[in-house]
Length: 333
Image 1 (cartoon, helix red, strand yellow):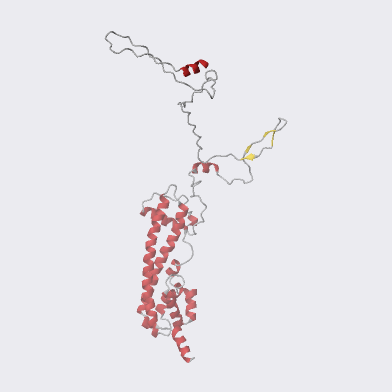
Image 2: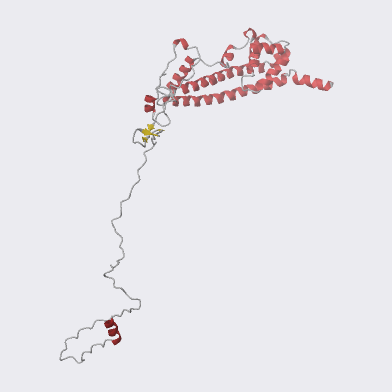
């Protein structure tokens, strides 16, 4: 039990050899984080310049981005001040370890480090905060957190504040960005003199285009000047005449159908001029009635006898005899 108590006192007590490395690591962490934020700031400035160069410019979105830009710019400024404080405390670690109470010239720096430990993304400051609480007591920590007597660095408190920046500062940032990137832009709604110190007003959508997705902004802007009454019915009465021929009956409201794209009419190909040949079918008068028992017989024509001359050595051939069966068949037909 005695060994456990001594271990707890050692772990929660002040240790100068543990505090100094944490302060040194916090210095490097501040430098890395500041460089990272600076690179992101330059990229955000280019994006804002592109927004203001569009036609029409997106003023409201650019103002919101500029507000975040100012916040990051302030954080980098506060990081640099806190980095200097950590450097100073690391160099005076022996004085801090030997003093019973906090040295007067280090009250502001130590109190500011304790106050900022929960407001920055530097994990080493959490350990530093615990070490100073173990050294100077819980009341010293509470006074630092509550800024009793105004002991904190005012500039760090202002730059790490959660309050939004003034509207005039946002407008000045936008103008400077346009000058740097050579963008011809002027605010559509300049900040009124009586509202320069107030936060930027909430966007109302004046920089958002009408029907930006379809590209029919001019038509929509001329029609949609107000909100449409959803109870109003617009349509075409498609009723026909009644059974007695009088007024229409049974009609319903049919909304007009306006196709988004013109519907192409079906193309009818002209009929081909080439008429296919039809098989010849003889008429009843031309086609003789044939009996299935009838046999068609081909009778060759009898060639005429050539003119004989005295010099001919070969006598003419006698005419071929006709087939009696064929003749009888023809005659019978």
